[in-house]
Structure formats: structure tokens, C-alpha cells
Image (cartoon, rainbow, N blue to C red; front, side):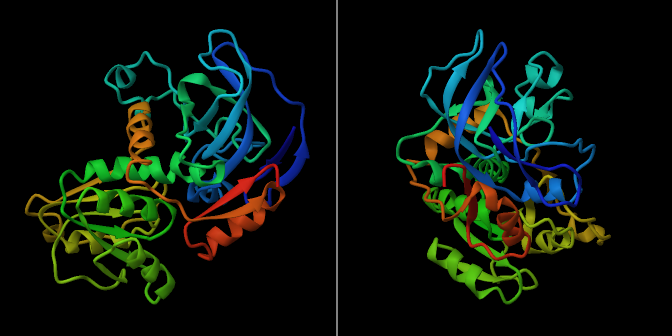
Length: 328
């Protein structure tokens, strides 16, 4: 098999040939047809996540087809499945028993502790592989597996918010905005100051207001989701939400949050984070997406151009999401 391998933090990924693994009990071997490039992959290769062990194959927005089935795994040869960030949980701890498997202390994550989808084959736990609606082709479906799922979980944390702010209008935001509009919410899109292209993109998806993250609409927000990994946006978002409003931090990594006056949090405002996802999130969102229907804006890259795709994401040169295509 071929894989783009992270050998050391801060180095470009290495294009390698490896022996194709065989599935053990409860595992599936997928032939990868598409893998989205997520900001979390950047946090991995740039060394911003804790306890990174190398070598590792990044990638956790995987679409593939089953080519081998391990003992006890529930799938058939040829099934098209999607594989997300959460790739394993123990199923026994208090978190798992409460349906909070996303917080399992023994959890393992695809493309982080488990080799991921920057490859033409990948081994996965059958419990964390989900059928993909035929409405989507492989490349279109890939961003749903993280940008979509984490965005959906973040949106659920906002409750019934009618006026919804989104800070950072990239892969996750462009999916969430479509779901929010479908649900009858009003979307306010905050971008990098002066990023006219991102603001026009948000308007095309139905945003009722767009502006730089250093500005604020006249309408107080009921809730805000922060996708940009910028701690300075937390006090800005708190200042933009109404009394009892909610600010959700939707990323796995964020720069330090600066000190801010208690008055920004007072009056029962809520600040919370979203961590990972659950199987329930995947089941709900993947059923909802084709009903909206969510359409993903993507830019395809051959597998061997994974480093170029990561550079485009790092430099803000993508509108939507990059997707690696092993067969290209």
C-alpha cells in the first residue's frame, strides 16, 4: 500500500510504500477513495497536539470501500463507509456507558494514534465506520466526516439559537451554515478582516450578515461557534452574544485565550468546548445531510500532493475543503 507518512513533527510528509495490513477481530480493511484534509491534520503535523507519536499516517475524513473483514466485524465486502476522527473507545468506562464515548480516557483517534486515510488502504474499527448516502460522491462526502460532524455537534450545543454567529468561515462553517439555514436560523459570518472572498462565500450560502472578526452586527447573537483556532476570538464572541447566550469553541486546538473582564461572561452567558464526536452524532448528521441537502465545496488533490494541500489550508488559500484522492 501507499501512504503519506509523518515521520517527525514539522517535517513534510513522506510518500512511502508499506505492507498492506490485514484486519484483526472487529476490524475492516478499506480501500480509500477520498480523504479530507482537516485543520486538525495541521495541528498534528505542526506539533500542536499533545503526545504525538511518530511515524503516523494522518487523515480522518475517510471514504472507502471494504476489501477485507475481520472476525466479528459487521460489514460486507464492497460496502462504502465513512471513517471519522474518533476511531476507538473502550465501551466500558463511565463516559462510554453514559453515551459520552467522545470523552473516553482510552479513546484513540484516526490519523493521530491510529494510522489514517492519507493512504490507499486503512484499517478501521467496524464500530466507527458509517454508511454514506449515495447522494454524495466520494470526494463530496469526505468533509462530512469531521468538518460536518464536529460542526453538527457544535450546532447542537447552541440549542435553539435563532441568531447564530460563526467565527472562521472554512470547511466546518460552510457545512454548518447550510444546516442552520435549513433549520430556519439566521447566520452571521465572521471572517478574517478583509477576507472578501470568504464573506461572499458565506453570503452565497445564505448568511444574513458578514464582516471581519473585529466587527459586530447590531443584532445581538443568541449563540456563536468559533472554528478559527484563535483564542482572541473568545472575548469577542462573548461580547457579541446576548444575556444567557452561548459561545462554543469547536476546535481541538486554540491559541491561548487572553484575560477578559468578568462582565463579558456575567448575565449567565455560557462558554463551552466541543470535544470529538459520538456515534450518535454521526448517525444523526449523516442522515440529515442529504435532506438539507448539504453541498460541500471541495478542491481535489492527488494523494502525493498532501503537503501542498496542507500548505493551502495553513495559508488560508482554500474556500471550502481540500480532499486527497488516492486514485488520482
